[in-house]
Length: 410
Ligand SMILES: Nc1nc2c(c(=O)[nH]1)N[C@H]1C(S)=C(S)[C@@H](COP(=O)(O)O)O[C@H]1N2
Ligand SMILES: [Mo]
Image (tube, rainbow, N blue to C red; front, side, top):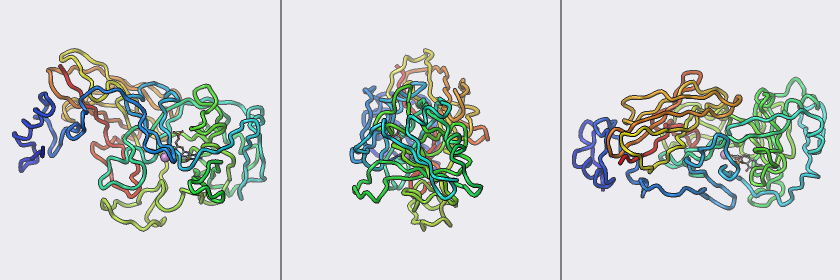
């Protein structure tokens, strides 16, 4: 079926009839369909069938596993529902009893090595819930497609991490006044198995490294960090692309320049400084690209899930989470009529800075038919999520367009 729009960009009557037949139900707010808008279940096979959700394996060498959005319903993401993003292979030897962390670099006063036991004994422990979202989360929404994992919107989690503050360790070592950045080094294996190559070695400016919530963690949700997520030690930095949270952490270098490790080069985790044409080949230099720092405002509907069948006329509860990088979320709104009108949701405070915030709302789907629920969050700087896919960029990063689910009222 090919849908046709009239001169003004509205769905032609014949197309609407065809859609109704395909969906097996009326589109209730069809008169509110925005110009050139195709109900999103169209083309998604079986999208209106309430199937069981399971983790989606995008690849196994390296492991990349995505979480279906409805499985992110928990307030604190359980380990088995956390997406996995590996750039290399998991280290073959993972022994907590012999594991060490070394602090070095041209801007460290000295080089110092701690055992895991030292870290636990010498520094105060802290626990925070932190949002870790892959910079490429949502990449599948960009046209043309870019290289990289074609994540839907499920490469995000907010788990609870326990460890010591990086700033306390850096104070113990001493950092020089010219320190501007930190870079992590990990024990995972490059896909080529070349021991001289690192799978990934990224970092953050010193100010972000010294924030209270920047942890060197050994626990995830109250237990040892599982192998896939960085056992036995991990750098955890909330609100920024999750690629700065180094797993299987063995070393942190205090740098007097922007860290230049693997995946800091080219356009990795960078976006163009100025808008570019979709598909444009932009020179991969600092003149054209900037490193992604705080992630943009975003929200998810985690209940119900697309395809759910709801009794018409009865009140249903919707819920989800919203987050905004280093900022907080000020408001969350939902629409059931394709964005014509919006309703404010109840929004909770974050458990701590850099944790996601839970929202909920009650709606009534007035008559039977097809509905879409759209959610839109606004951050503490009054910046809202875009309704449509934001600026295309060569790495396919930062797609924070409004999330939608499709529901059927019966
Ligand atoms: N050592 C190491 N750390 C890493 C990675 C990696 O491949 N190796 N992947 C990074 C990326 S790109 C992401 S999105 C997150 C994923 O964290 P998770 O697998 O625990 O969800 O880990 C980051 N830390
Ligand atoms: Mo990532």
